[in-house]
Length: 237
Image (tube, rainbow, N blue to C red; front, side, top):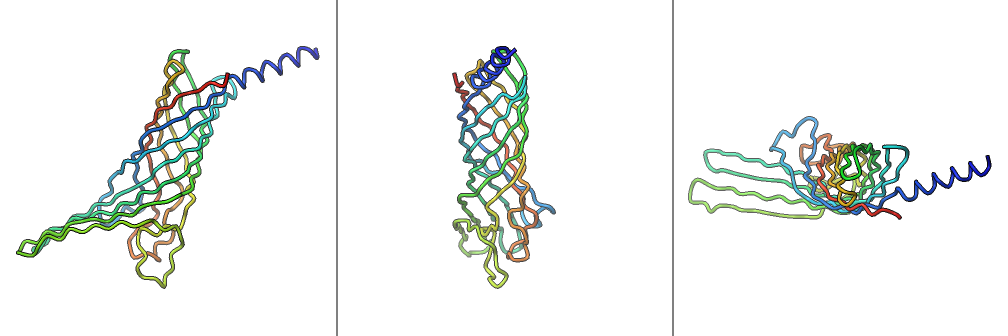
């Protein structure tokens, strides 16, 4: 009996260790933001970025896996506005791009044969903002002889609480570096060599918090991102 228990324990340990994988991954992000209520000025458009990182796939039981990761990922959103009056035509855009270190923990259900396996995943994530850029650009085209006015400015995003005594705080002041969210995804593993992963992330943290301290109309703004990535599973043999 003692030998049987030791043999079973060693078998489970051997299977667990040798079933694990390190998964370097890289891909693109297509991100936006949710506003509740929607922004009163301008239309939201998506912004393309990239992500790169590494995951650790740990078999739990049968078809269920656990995959913690550490990734660099870009979140962004852009608003575009246009206006035509009797004197001029104006276009304007504001873009926020934020760089995060993010740690998602995905529970995976993997199905299929050895050559082709499909999986579905879901789990929480937490991100820490490293840096960001705010960009504002536009054109004012006058209908008379006044020269066209093209303007563009870019500045670093400042992660600090806004103060009501300062009047020039704008979109580039974000009080919160931490972004808690959830991710849902699916993917396919081909011949144990390549993983194609698609997932959607929903941020649960409001970027700006109390908008009464800003000179812009933002409320309940949260990150949204679609990730398309390719990974290479490296078995721990």
